Amino acid sequence: MNSVETFQLSIYGASALSFLISYSFCYTIIKLNKSYKFKKNDQKRLSNLNIVPLGGVAMATSFFVSVRFLGQADSNIVFISIFALGISILGVIDDFKNLNWKLKIFFQFFLVSFPIIILGTVINVENLLGFNLGNNLNIIFTVFWVIVLMNSINFIDNMDGFAAINSAIICLALTILSFVYNQNYLADVSFVLLFSILAFILFNFPPAKIYMGDSGSLFIGFIFGFVSILFDWNPSGESFLYSSIAPIFLFFTIPLLDFLTVFVYRLKNKISPARGGTDHISHRLLNEGYNVKQVLIIFVCINLFIFFLLGLSIMYEYLSLIIFIIYAIFIIFLFFKFQKMKPLN
Image (cartoon, rainbow, N blue to C red; front, top):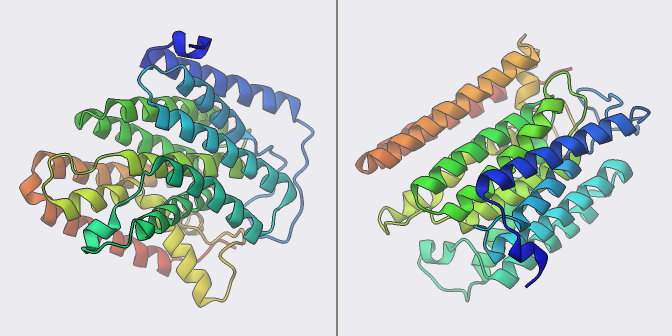
């Protein structure tokens, strides 16, 4: 038994360690990179400030180290954390080298599919659809789900504090829900990730001193994706359709809403979805006259309303279908509302 296995921390100790490592790394990166120069490219962005995009390295490293000292984390989480660190390194390379999008997707596919196949952890869509394809459809769907989540988090990393605050709220909700459903190891993992993100927010809150970059957004999306797979959304065995699918979308509403809004807009206007741009939902609100902090407050309120609906569905399971319909109407309303707003010039 090695020293890491014999020396374990409580959830509070691991979370404190995660916060301290993330904070220290962010602080050090900022101090050492005052002369950082933004690499010019042909993509249109909200701002091309000379702010180093290495916040994701701090978060990924703090999570990787802290989880290994967390007594309640199982071997699957430790294994997944290795690939999470790998996806963060891929993000660093992309931040500084502007990798071709096809090459990025290839490496994302490898880093996501390998742990899914090795661990055999999938979203069982074959069971949901009522047929058997030898688990192949489950693997394909699960890989696709995680990659979409990774890139949707990457999509909302387009304004100071936006991706980080939304991710922190998701972590908090995942922690609470995991605790309620007695899936304590996932509650602990989500709590550790929350403190890693909170330390980063101290430096990313507007005006930002550091960006998370692709290394952060891909890393957070990767962890969210695997937590959503490992989580048992239907512990009672009842209401399979609603309990297994709806909570996932409830947790990831903002990233997916932004992803769909931008994707549809760019598809209609023949713009590459892989390019940076100022057509995200946060930018559209800025164009409406809101300032950065007001936009952040708006999305915090949206998240809180969504989690309120989720809480109602847990407390009053017999109303789940009605609550889901309310949620669907709310999301459709927001989608068309954002579609009508003009992108920021």
